[in-house]
Image 1 (cartoon, rainbow, N blue to C red):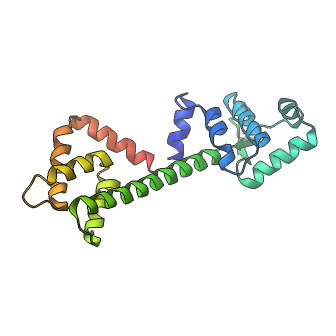
Image 2 (tube, rainbow, N blue to C red):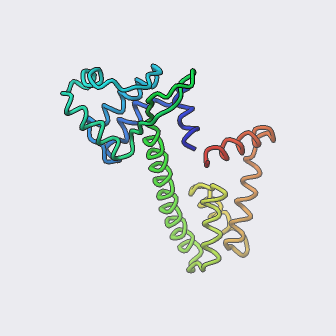
Image 3 (cartoon, one colour):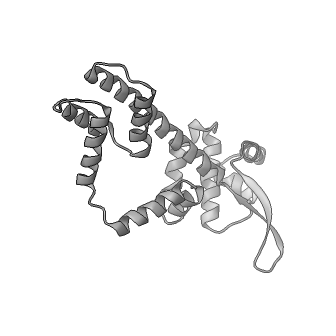
Length: 207
């Protein structure tokens, strides 16, 4: 997935600077380290592969020692990796990357979404137990998990289906599942070509 996020940044669709400013405090980075990441990204955009200490210190408006400490800290935390690579002529030269920050952003977003889904799951279970006037068993819970995590039904859609099931002679989770599937068919206006394109996109996103 990281390479997808990186591609979106390279294409200007996602702003790397905004990502840093929004998330740095969540990833054990202080303000000066975040500023250094912004400067390092600017260097990459200019195809600069070598960090020149004196020039970099001026950009950060800090002393050489402070700048060295900041860069060392980024290296220790994994946000800055310096390595040797070959140039177009096959000569060894120093280069760096700051891709680890993108990995951290993705992991954070993924964890947040999973937590939101867990909260949604809990809300749905409480609602269904109340509306059906009975506790749900393990098989019921597995079906609800499939709605939330696999089918991607939202909570309002499930509540609507649950209320609709009460109009039936025997309201149950199976009835709700049947209603949900019919609702999905009615709403599905995506063309087969677009479906395949979306599948490919999500496949890449999960890599």
